[in-house]
Length: 148
Image 1 (cartoon, one colour):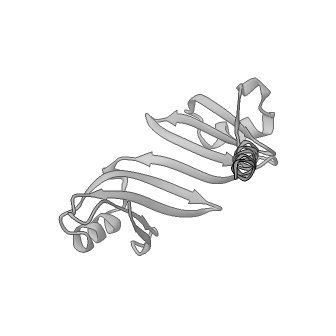
Image 2 (cartoon, rainbow, N blue to C red):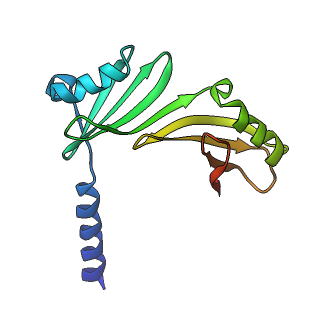
């Protein structure tokens, strides 16, 4: 029994270590990777870099908003996440929230872009049944609605 437990613990440890990211300094990031970030976000400041195997992750502020980018080893941004204010949520999505999520208020919002497809992820609070995390398409349709 102890051997089985120890084997499971060691296996879990190795599995987790395989997913570990390594923080690196910008001077150690290939030029084509860092230039992809600076080209899209020229006002990016305080960039923190992670080496995720062949790919990279960049976290930074631009125009006082938090951003996260996932960049391939070839310099292609495949995922971008940006914190946004409630006012930055498109009006059709705000109207959908007002109509379909009565009594709930927006707690946090972010704009998510995955392989050039845009989504808006909104955390809603205020219902006795619990908070919700709702993902909207730009046209206002709900892509995903989960209890948070």
